[in-house]
Image 1 (cartoon, chains in turn yellow, green):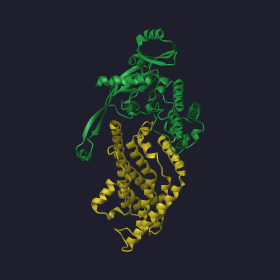
Image 2 (cartoon, chains in turn red, yellow):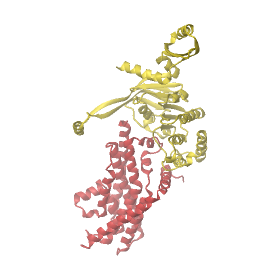
Image 3 (cartoon, chains in turn green, orange):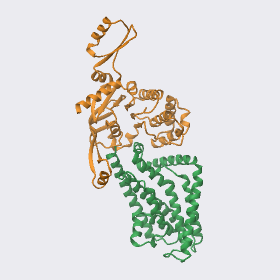
Length: 264
Length: 312
């Protein structure tokens, strides 16, 4: 069976990205340092909270370790793949370089989503996975294969949700030309994902679930790992991902129309 | 049927406008004033297969806007465009695979990697079969003699070297239509010649149609028999380069070196050239004599000056 063409394009970009990053080995050590710091701070805060209580809205310390791990892992995926592409997109809309991506006989959304890679940020994926591992090993229930599979699938869904969120933000630069605040905005919101969304008051919980899908992206996979997952949640998560992906696509096309309609 | 068909093409931009100063800036936060700019204002032309056409005009004349509409990046505000039978702004794959857009001041290769790696990327995007791709690549690399440049990271290349690999990268899919926007900008004379020669070779070898903008008249004179001149978004002239000279430069320059070493330079209307020459030869002792059309730069300047008067 021939490989689908979009995959070939994405794969070629990925290979180039890896080759590119290999030239900057120093970044590898910076990324390790960054990630250690991140894990350390996360653990310290958790320890502080659980020195006062043994449970947070039904989540034990080990449960929260899993959430922290998922948040770090997904953050790593976003920092390595989604964010650099989206920042480049916003930059190119501003200085007109997007033209070249648009003269290619390939889907423009695909191209703008796979051009950049920050390989060394994948260190966060490793440290996130380690934290998850430690958390799970301390759970009384342990893990079985179906839950692990569900967890992996939901991680994928989570990554898709975060990608859509980022693309919607970056597409905004077709209207608001200068979007320098994109990463800060995302980081600020994403940090809230370190806690289970259940602890936030109603309005915040809803906006974190649907408006900014951090809650869905992080908490739902963690639920699979800690035996909290209901089929209903899985259904809602999947449906939401499909709807959000479709809406994102429409919005992207709209932005593109504006780009070609108005810019000089 | 033309490869490029443009009929009454228009592009209007709406741009925010305000007075200078902080007060005006604050007011414009709340109530924007918009002004319409007609970047392209109803131009029509047609280009036949294999033609190399120079697209001329001063900065802001609407050249790049037109090229962007031709390559599908911008939607026209009015009029019609067809290239290779396609409506460009639909961005159909069949169309995009058969054209290329090269902008002299922009870089589309991977900065930190050798160009060869970027070429591989184009192979994936344009879905080129490996054998064909290699053959084309080697052919183009040889034509421009850049065998050792394509192995160096692009960031280590000089501006001219970069442009050469850039051009090769844009032609790997053997496009039938080339839109070249200032392909020689900032290059030294030798390098300009090189790129120029390459475009001519490519045109001859593959029968491709080329529309080229350049501020270097040498480019235009070397490559284009036909020129299209636009100014303020309107078509001023479309025809043979010589006809342009004929129409807008009614004066010829007579230069004579006299026996005493003095040089004389006279601007004379075309139909009086023979009379003036005869008179000069009769009255003075002439060692050397030339009669020339003015440099094409001056002609173009004349064209724009004439237009400005018409508009004013």
